[in-house]
Amino acid sequence: MARYRGPVEKIERRFDVSLFLKGERRLAGKSAVERRHYGPGQHGQRRAKPSDYALQLHEKQKAKMLYGISERQFRSIFREASRREGNTGELLVTLLESRLDNVVYRMGFATTRRFARQLVTHGHILVNGKKVNIPSAMVEPGSKVEIKERSKTNVQIKRAIELTHQTGIVAWVDVDQEKIFGIFARIPEREEITIPIKERLIVELYSK
Image 1 (cartoon, rainbow, N blue to C red):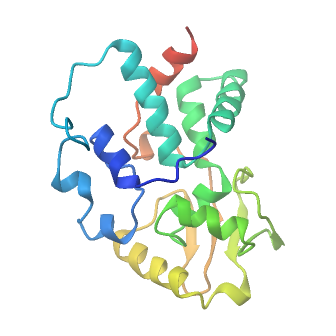
Image 2: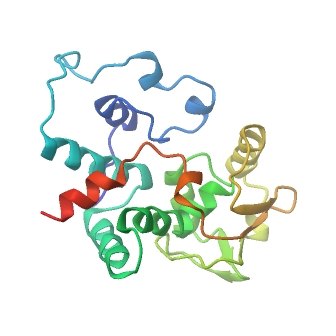
Image 3: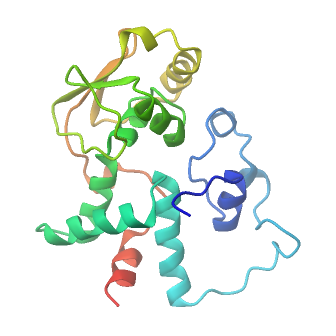
C-alpha cells in the first residue's frame, strides 16, 4: 500500500508517541496516546525489548507516518539528502519540512498534514500566485503560500487558523492569518524542528 488509511490513533499507540495525526483532538489534549500509554490490541500492554534493527525500522516508519508519505517518496528524499553536502539526517528532516503540504500545515492553514495534503491536491493552494496541486512540491525560501480566494471561507480552514492561532506558528514562516497567506521565510535549523524522530537511526538503517 502506498499510504496508510486506517485508524491513525492506533498507529500512534503502537509507537507510544503523538505523530500529530489528529487535529482538534490532539490540540484539545484528547489524543488516545496521551490517555493509553500502551499498544493497541489484545497484547498491547506487552512491550518486548526491540532489537537495534527494529528501533531503526520504527524510526523510519514513524517519519513516514508523521509526514504522510510513501516508501518510494521517502527513499527519494533520503537519496537527495545523501547527495547533498552536510549531515544526511538533518538534511532529510529539512527536506521533509520543505514539502508543500508540510509548509501549509506549518502555516496553520490545516490542523493535520493529512488535511494540508487534501487542500493542496484539491487545488486550494497558490504558490507565488500560481496553483500547485502537488503535495510533494518543494517550497523555496521566500515563496508566498496562500489559500485561493474562493477557498478562504472554507469552514475547516477557518477553524484550523483559529486553533493554530492559539497554539502558535513556527519561527521559519511568516503568516498573515487575516489575509490567509504566509511566506516560507527560511529553511529551519534541525534544533528548531520539534518532532519525535531520531533521524540518526534512519541513516543507520539505510547504511546497511
